[in-house]
Amino acid sequence: MKYRTIIFVAVVLFNLPVSAQRPLVLQGATMIDGVGRRPVPDAFIIIEHGMITGVGNKNSVIIPPGAEIIDLKGKFIMPGLVDTYTQCRSERDLQEMFAWGVTSVNCVFASVTEAKTYGAQAELDSNMLPRIFPTAPVFTAEHGWWSEKTVEDNGINRFPKTAEEARAQVRAVKALGIDRIMIVYDSMTWCRGNVKPLDHMQSDIMQALINEATQQKMTTEIHSPEFNDAVAGQNAGATAFIHGVITDRMSAPFVANFPVKGEFFVPTLCRYEFLGDREGFIRNVFSDERFRSTFSGDSIKYYTGSGYIKNNSDQCPDTAIVRSHIGILDENMMTVVKNYGNITLATDLPEFSGIADHMELEYMVQAGLTPMQALAVGTNLSGQFMSAPVGVIYIGNKADMLILDADPSLDIRNTRSLRTIIKNGKIYDRAELLKRLQR
Image 1: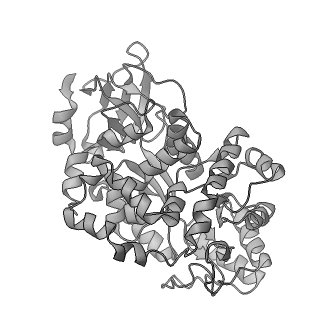
Image 2: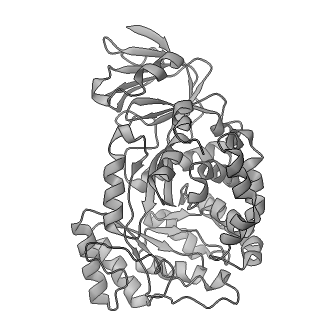
Image 3: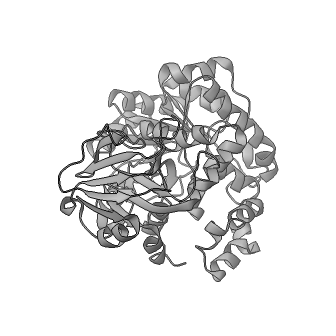
């Protein structure tokens, strides 16, 4: 057995394929497993063939012969972050997410073709991207939200006109190997002020999409900021409520269904913070030197300039209504938590890919979660939403982990002290990842 420090291992293993690695033993760090249990000091984690094969203290694990032993004393280790809903405008967005410790992501794509292309790229460790669990396509009304994103898509019609057609399109999506669909049921009227309303999807179309997806054992994500739309989606059998509910405090019967039906509340707090006060959100980002240091001076000028702020005001021009209702969204999220429902980490903010995930954790704690609860949301619960063995440091799970310099259980902002990313048991030095992304 050979001992090496993480400094040397990061350099040596940065470009090694997973299959060429010997078993790894991560020794001595304080471990946060993602489940919400108290951090475990001086933990031992064994990795073989990209999977976790042992977890515990020195006396409870068996170290494989010839293993590489990495000494992590003084460090903190946690599962990789799992973002359950965002958009990917380019491969660079994914690279930025990975450099900030997002090792799994549910990207929503307008087309199945685009989803399959990005998913294939993420399979290659050499691309240094998070693993992708794609949602595609986005079904909407012909003149509704996302309708402007018309791309070639294997003949899939994102604007079905009848219930029968809606069912046929879902079957076609499933046949192409996609297991998640997005339904923009709402019209976004609540935050558009005097701007012309968008078309609302017909309820029978929405019901047909969800019915067929359920029959095909697919996940259905419904756009539901308005409470009435969320109720309709829940009655139809939706799996997840994207962007939470911000217009009204949710009723007791609605909330009670979350643990019973295994539904997921996906609040995207930082998205609303951005929409409600773009300048304030950007100031918050650049007030943290760990974020600021990853941007060039020109990029900082761009993001803080009036042109950028103005160009991002068309989605929800009624910023006052967003600002005045963020507190309601916070309350709704905490109500789900207190009733043992599931919430997840999600950002929908490609403008600050990866950074937004750490901001989301901070906003969750500000809304009432403890740091340990927020960490469990960003790892374990979000991994459950993916229905994949990610988000928990546990035997049989993917070896996706983050090594930190400071304890995030004491201050959630310490997730930003990220030093090393591990995906599929392969070690990536974060400083090297950032060099590839010089803005």
